[in-house]
Image 1 (cartoon, rainbow, N blue to C red):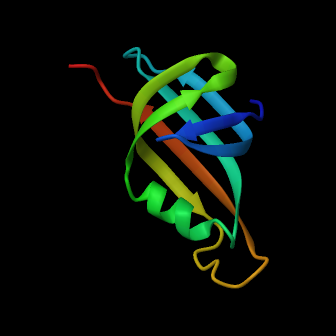
Image 2 (image 1 turned 90 degrees about the horizontal axis):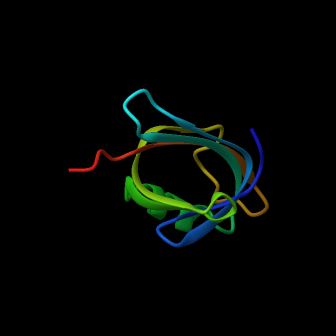
Amino acid sequence: MMSEPIQLNGRQIETHQLDLRQLEDGRRHLSCDFKVTSEVYHDIAVLLYEMNFRVTLPAKDQEFDAAISNYFTDTTNLYKDNEVADYHLELTELASN
């Protein structure tokens, strides 16, 4: 587990925990935690509604297509100023055709 930036569809997110592993079928599974402030809440919510992502891990020189397999947050309403929420996101690589 480590901390590093990731990109989802070109949007950079600074993670404070990241775990990348390979599943038995060879696909990659990414698990990460990150903070979301009230200032970027709307943009992150819209991004996550896309459900499917081009994932880029610059520090690992990896890029792949993935979909959300698990996601949760401790706060669902960040419309008040200066609020911060913890987000947990898990992405599973899409099977190649």
